[in-house]
Structures are given as C-alpha cells and as structure tokens.
Length: 590
Ligand code: NOJ
Image (tube, rainbow, N blue to C red; front, side, top):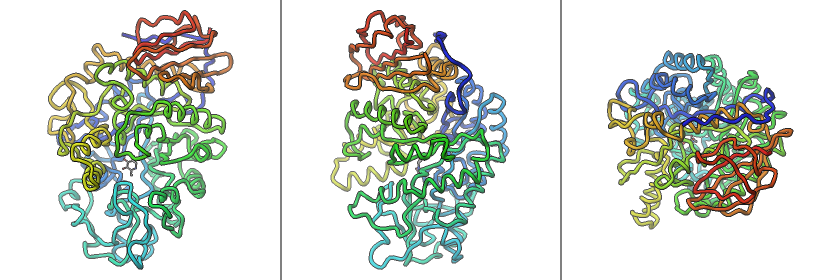
C-alpha cells in the first residue's frame, strides 16, 4: 500500500532549518552487528544506510559509541575522542558519516557532558593526587555521613568514596581491553576514602564541575573535535542538571533534591557559552537538549532562537502519565486526560514563547510507546500509526526511534535473567527489598525497563532477527511476526511513517503552522488544528480500542483527507465523525 499525500493549498519554500526535518535515532549496540560478536557496531549501521535513507529522514542520532566501560551502555565515557573498539574505529565512523552524507543525511552525536566515567583520565588523575583535576568533579569531605542527602537517579545515595574502586565495581581488565581503555591507571588503592564524589547516575559516572572554566573549555573542545569530523547535530545528555548550586545544599525533604540542581539559572548561560565556543558557529547545526523534570519557561529560554542556545528540547512530562505519584517503578494505565493536557500546555506554551519542541514517543530509555499507549496485540497496526500521526502532525521536530517505524514492541521476557540494564536490576532489588512481591516487582520491570527499547532491530524472521550471526547481547522475542522484511513486503506501518515524513517536508502548515488544541474534554480523542496562512488542518486521533464519536468544526466537513490510517477513510461527510478503534485522520479545511 502506498500513501500518496494529496496536494493541498500549501505554501512551500518557507521552512526554516530543522522544522521540516525528521530525525531517526539509532542505538548502535542494537542496530546491526557486522562482525558477529553479538553487539551492533558502526559498520553495521553503514550497511543499513540504504534502509535509513529509504525512510526519508534528515539526520541520524547515534547514542554514544565512545570508549567506555559500558556500565551505562556508553553514557559512562572514558574517552570522548575515541571510538570504542567493540563498536568500531574512527575510520568506520568517517565511512558512516560519508555514506549518510551521500544521501543528504546528517549525523547527530550524543554528548554526555554532565559526567564522565570514573575511568576517564581526568578522574584518574584526580585520584592520583593531581589537585587541579580534583576540581573537575565535585569532591567533598563529609563530617558526618555524606556531603549531602541527594540520591542517585539509579538508586542509593549520590555520593561514593573517592577511591579507585574499579575492582569492587566489577570493571575488569578484560572489560577494559575489549572497550579500549586501561583499567584504573591510578590504582585501586589511590584516592582518599575520607572524601566523596558526586554521581547523580551510576557510581561510575562522576558529575563534572561545570563551574570550573577549565572543564567548560575541555568540553567545548570535545564538541569542536566532532564538528571537525563533519558532525552537525548534537544531542546533549541531561544538560539541564549541569548547574549544581556550588554549596551543594541538602534537600529539606528527601525527594526535593532534584529541584535544587535542575534548571538553575546558570544552565542557560553555560549552554550559550558552549554554543558560542562550538556548534553555534555553524549556522546549519541542529541541537537538542535532554531536559529532565523541566518547565516550559526554561525550555523557551533554551530554544528561542534569539537566545542562541539550542535548537530544541526533549521534555518527558508526557511519558510520565503512567507513573504512580511521579514514580517510574510503578504501574497504572496511562492517564489520557493528563496526556492531552500536557500536549496542549507544551504545544501552546512553547509556541507563545517562540520555543521549539522535539517530538517523540520512544527512545532508548523508554519502554515502547506501543505497549504503553496502544494495543500491540489487538490493534498493533492501527495504534502504531495513530501514535505516529499524533506526534508527526504536532508543532516541533519528530524523532523516530529505530524499530518504531515497523511497530516493534517490548520483548516478551519471562525472567529477570533476560534484563541487562543496571537501572532495571537495581530497581528490581530495591522494590523487593522494600516489600514489593517478586511477582509484582517483575511485572513492573517488565513494563518499565529501558531494555524494552534496546532489543536488537528486527530485520527479518531468522533466529537472531538478522541482527547478528552471533549471540545477541539482548534477546529479541517476536521477530517472526514483526520485522523489516515483512513490513517492506506487505506491512502498513513503515509506508505510513514514510508518508508522514514526506508530508512534513511538503506542507508548511505541518512544519511551521501554529498549533491549537481542539475538543480538550473529549474522553477518547486527541484533537488539534494546525494553521499557516490560509491553510488549516484538523488532526484527530482515537487513543482507544473502541469506536467513539467526535463533533468537528463545520469548515472541515467535506475537506480532503491528508492522511488516514484506515485505508477506506476517504472523507468526513458530516460534522459527527465516528472514529474506529485507534483511527487517526488528518483533514484539510475546505
Ligand atoms: C540520559 C540517557 O538517555 C540515559 O540513557 C543515561 O543513562 C543517562 N542520561 C545518564 O547519562
């Protein structure tokens, strides 16, 4: 089936920079393994460039592939300038950049600048007693207990003794050799056990002290290095927590620590400074900041072009509507009204302030949206395409996470042994230790683990999904049903994504139009309009597996259908539209 978008009264040729672009996210470890070691690599990605190009995307975001002990799958960087040999070489990277460029596709790199691995040379030199490197991190004495009461986002306190403890952390010489670094050159008995270092994430991810200008210079150098390799896109990991208050105060209430170190006013200044010293010098650069627990007001400041900071931001509020009281490791059906409220609030708020959103359902940290908001069993195709419509028709830049475009789902794991992610393993332990039954703890991990998104890309229905000839580092489970080959042959999700990507390029009303929520109280349908000059679209998305009726404004009755996920939807003939399960319709105003 092909979706040939209908021409409307579009105003073309007025799109700016990244507004009409779509970005495709590749998790290198899980995309394609070229050498049979069970782990995806850069050459594997190069092999699949024709597929990526066939999607029509403009840029590929690659999760970190730098030298790293892989305690947090590459977000623990030990060397920003080198490729992890387990994933390839610098030549492989350059080849990949060239192959993508030949198709007009840019590269977006993941810059993890809030923290380094404790195996990074800076941390090791600090451990070895070089005082100037101690000031690269937050290293503090503690008179009683720990320097403050902050907690790590991966569980436990955010402080660890400042010692070269790689052996006790399970980083072995074999790990080091495989991943291209020398384990703990400062030695396991180096450091000073009366001091502590701050780690908001894993104990091997030490937070960098951005207040130190030397740190900021070094990090700008890293960005420039990759710019010189032809990179024009940068995704900045947890960038809104780089401005910790210098006195590192304890939170008054246990859970308030986040507020103390998130989105402090200095963050904006540091981002602008980084922009001026690196990516901001390239007018074609595209940047996205990952913003944890953020606000519209801050995100406007980060992305309004007058501010010369970032192109766009990821916020995560819409992906917490299935958390109980804001806690990830819990289960409840998603709160649709809250989801609608958040989309409306962010859509309208960011537009008013001249800000720009990155639009997404999925990434490597989120369980598959299809499992959370759709029905992967009863209505996989309908709900996958409905969810895609909702995101791709909004105001912002859409991101597609590998496998989303073929309707990949969470794996059907039956035991904790299948999970690899440190976050999931810690969470399971913590849940059980605090009284949750093992059964419920497993159910929670099953629905929330990041591994859900990290299973290998399913290329075909073979034993390892065409991902590897070896043993995959994470096991795929349903490739016999869901895979690229099957989608290419007769699937409906992949062509639908391709059509959505084309539409954004074709119609300025999609890439540039203003956004207005519609039917905000409707219990089942997400609805909004997009307006650009005389062009106007109405987008309707039924988030449920039952039929529902929605009344639409008269000017859309009889309007042509831009795209719909039920092939027989050719028109809306009355203002009372009966929408079928997970139906999505985009209509031109008459
Ligand atoms: C956000 C990344 O997306 C996630 O995968 C990582 O664990 C944390 N930042 C820490 O770097």
